[in-house]
Image (cartoon, rainbow, N blue to C red; front, side, top):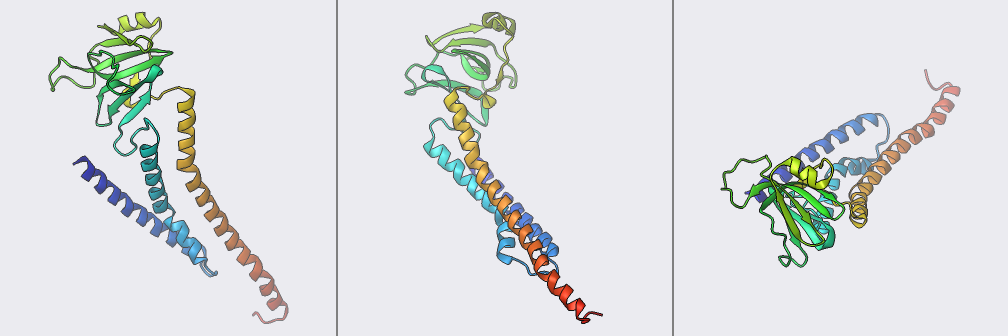
Length: 241
């Protein structure tokens, strides 16, 4: 059902972008009223929203297939590296059930008592809050902490705590826990990778849009410059009333 929902959403988004392209055509057609229109350039500008969508979709698919531990941009699933080969892993539709995997998978998984709802990485230590305990039933209260833990990635040991005050005392400072789906690794390589991916995602479409706008503006005013001397010459000959 989730896949069907995404397909329906993608079709609706396509329709909205086609509509936006039609509006762009109308606006540009009016702006060039009384002038020679660059039809191919207008068409390319109108198709830019739809082409950008397909480009972003293709980039997302390629990154997910070829980049290790890359988040799923379509379903919201996430994988963020932690020190010493551990990986925070979770599903976008059930972030409270996130867990810490290891590489290779299932070899040295930490003995956590449930799913991770929130966490903070301080050096090589993970401070976190459980969103769901393995001992709870499936209908346990959501969107609240169910206990806390300290995970040392150096040794693989886990210390479970009952209150946030105990967690702050173990950390030596007030912890700043973020939801699992919003956690981002601060490793220098991971930060660099995110910047490269964002550049690949957004720079080419922006450059194409700027190029189209530049060419449209240049064509619009260049045509005026070419026609103005001819009009002045006609007027000096007394051919205009």
